[in-house]
Image (tube, rainbow, N blue to C red; front, side, top):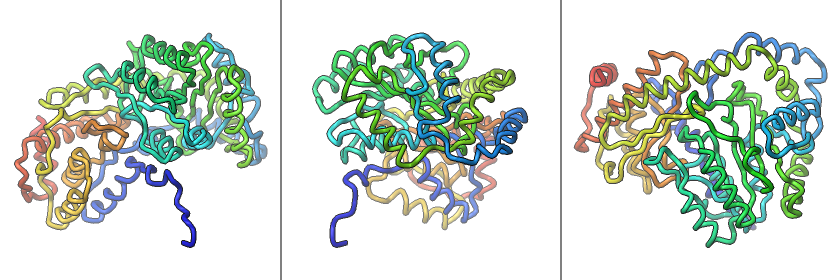
Length: 455
């Protein structure tokens, strides 16, 4: 091109959760039966949307106004409802004007980071949800700045590291918290959240809290929403319906602005986010109209609790099976519907493998694992996918130096989920014990062998 056209942060945009699908499709063409555990879509994994919820959406779809534009910030009645829901928590009170709707949190995330000054950075947890870390790094054109979540301490944040990095890096303007967390399934303790707020107040920062899983905290555990602990610190809470209802195809999320008028720069920044949305006119109308009716329905809390119980049971099943494997670190999920497994340092190398079905599959995997810079946990994920059809996501893809993988607790069929866990356990054990020589065995025999080894 006559002039340079590539954005400074283009190289930071990578989404392995979706990228792995390309490999899965190539393997599927070679005869591998694929089981997708890479993406948090409850509907794709077989979640049945209750009839009462469908009837609400169907009724609204018959109204002409559901097909038109809505106000840029979102439908007033829905924002009033959400503000009232928020104000029941205590803490900071908000008005409908403090809520802005987006086409899913992906839209919100790109605008929240994209309209920061190029030199202003948000420190993110590690591991972290890829859309956050990639969008933040892309806006700055530099690698993400992170604070660690410790798998040996139930994925609690390393607050000493957070404080030190904030203290000695004046470009840091804000702190990201994902609570409950993706990809780990952890929830932040009250004490950790209050200390993060204290750090933000001490260094004059703002806080971003991704709380899309806030209502998917399991029995026996608790965590506070940002609104209850933030005090007078400026902040944004990100929420949506894609995981909770679940309705990911609605592309409907929103941010709640806390203490928006306490800092002149923060107020101007949040106005720029709204102005950016105004250029797009508005977000989708129909799902916004459905939110109050769905949340108010008497069956909704019952439905939500049944999902929480199922995810918690599946977390316990996976924990009992996988935590028995020497060399891996596993924590029970406390919220959301993910589990991350970490390989202890030094266990993975560039010679381990799993038995593959035929030469064509072997050639494809050789091509992938021998590419320059392939992370050790990605090698495992490729072999697991080729050998068993099970598609998980390498933990290093979540902006982490930890080798491991993330899978979901979403499959509504318990027997099928147990088979997934058994296959995972077999794959980990076989891979760690392999000598680097890949044996040829028939495809059907592999699954039988995995199940037999698990028993």
